[in-house]
Length: 282
Length: 282
Image 1: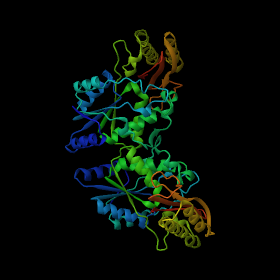
Image 2 (image 1 turned 45 degrees about the vertical axis):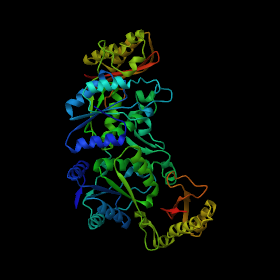
Image 3 (image 1 turned 180 degrees about the horizontal axis):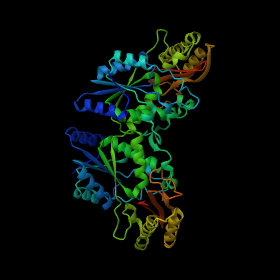
Image 4 (image 1 turned 120 degrees about the horizontal axis):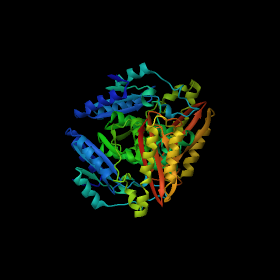
């Protein structure tokens, strides 16, 4: 496994593979890797000749009061996991390499970026769209892999790719869960054992709401009631940022259930912000 | 000369050249072509194996009260000129092909986009950066060509390319002028003969101010005085939007002359907006 820190070198290395006719897949990450990330690497390895994984805690997607400096970092562990999962090239830039002094440009996806998580994390999705656009330009993969857990992110990246004619196939892979159902997330490490036990409420809530949708008589009112009954049953839950049933493409709240429905939740347990979602067909 | 209207086809056509090892140069235009545009095509032909020219009057770079619908269009004449200048492929998309319904994404270059012309044309440079980013992603040229007449545009495109790690060499070619010095522009056609005679005031003003800079005793006050004396001498000039001496990289007004200085002017003659600039070494 090659470890490359310089954007120009990873660009040239990926290019050298491409001109030999090898397909290059990219898995962008912020490190602190878990099975969710590794499932993306394994899928990328199945689909492509060469897998590039990037590790970069992107400062522009964190708000001023968010956890940029506290975000978990484990470079040695990450490299070991990436190698075991079959990564060929790790791109490990430092902040200066990607955001030099006088950096001025941003990529924004209007509308979609202000809904759901965007309403609570101003500028977050502009930071995401910008860094992903940069990584795509540096590596020029044929495919790139993202987890469904960050559902809104996947919708925004797909829009950016379509709108800017970026020639990358965006592949969204299923959320990987702990045995009790908690969606894997680097931020799960912030919780103490009591909070960790409480956090299963997200999965339990989504599962209960899914049953309401799959029941043909279900209405959005019944779905929302199920969501809130479940969430209210957990005393350690300190804040519900949103919980509802949404259109999977526009992310607008639904007034009537449709063929495809997105259940999505963002809450805080203590100071740890957790999100989860399920796509449910009626 | 191939004429291609579909983004996917021009992408595939350019790709087919690239994998055969041929270099592809891009000349983005809004049509209504003059010798300035054709000088870009000729330069692109010298530098590259294959020249793609695009003709697209980009709606997102026009403000609501600007001249999008009146902007001169001459497809037949343009195609004839492009063929004579050695263009290999003309990309001629319609608006729907580049801005489908639900288009949401924009590329912005902060700071630089609000200065000079940007202060009078809100959103203009975001429209420019977005369409140029799209054209780069569709054609994937190794080099792209722009005229110095739109100096601020070239600074913004260079910033976008650097910040987003776009792998395109941005080449800026000298302003082409009429015999009396007027910078060629598709908008020159808006003027009546009397206004056209008056419009030489821009070149005369820049030339006078250049002399002040080249005179070692010159100060920015003396340069600005020369600019305004000249501009005030033309009664048909209906508005001076800006006229001054600026840093060529930051576009900030200079308080002291430096090694490299940008003289730049934007005025209206009747309702026709005209810009011009000169880079002057002290």
